Length: 146
Image: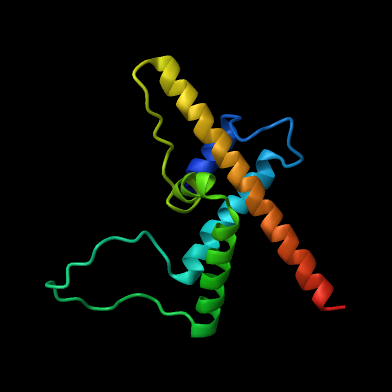
């Protein structure tokens, strides 16, 4: 049986990069919410966006979901990503939804390591906001049902 290929977020968890002793959230919490965001984006049909060549003939072979479910997922995705502060949002979407590695920049190894560390901190902080968004949303939904 083939092993499941790990996402970038899960690889970062294995490396210990998503652990933060000062936070109440664990690396597992962060991975869970990051994968949840990715799943919601997939349900919304919002894959990686690129420019379309309108000159080329196209055949629509995509799987269509029920309109209301897809619209609900899309709305939830935009609310969730909107809750993440702008300075963290790109890194969260890039790693969690697009499954891309952080591209650290610098002229020396020390500068590259420092830049990567800062981006990992941004990723963790963005995921912490996302956890709080879903907890707040869950509490709101539970409160409405009483």
